[in-house]
Amino acid sequence: NYVVLTGDIHSAWVHDLKKDFTDTASPIVATEFVGTSVTSEFPAAFVQPVTAAAKATPWTKFFNGSGRGYTVCTLTPN
Image 1: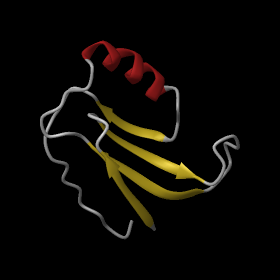
Image 2: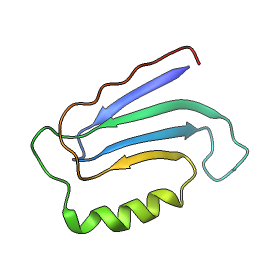
Image 3: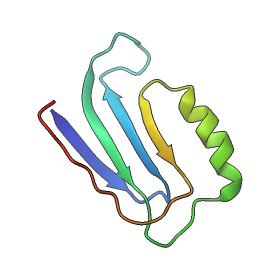
């Protein structure tokens, strides 16, 4: 039930953190929320390639390189 809060890499992400990323059966040990910047922009030229790469990694649950602002999350025991 660990949650890791990180940022600012000028984009927003959510990842499952696994004990061993080379083992697809490896357990998830935490969830990482990466907060975006409030004013600095992620390079527009990188949004499409990063979006494509993120879809190819099953532990990446969310990516947004175009939005700015604050991140609000509701955490539950589930």
